[in-house]
Length: 72
Image (cartoon, one colour):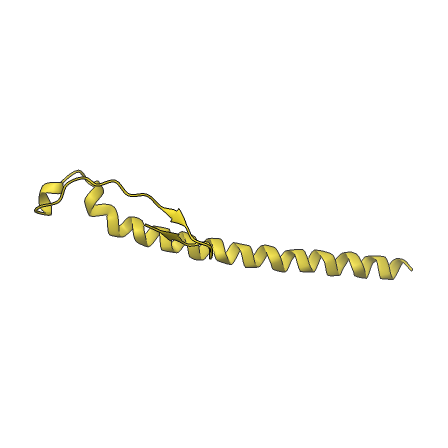
């Protein structure tokens, strides 16, 4: 009887661990995408808009799409 309880607890913990690992991987990929965007926007945030002729500060908004990514 005890062995069944332990096995059930182990299987539940293992299942939760797999979910956590999956969520962690999604967050890691999301972090990488954000870092790439920040790196691409870095020249614009340095305060030297004169380096890019004809550009002026603009306002952007981000919206989360249904699949968890973001769009402008």
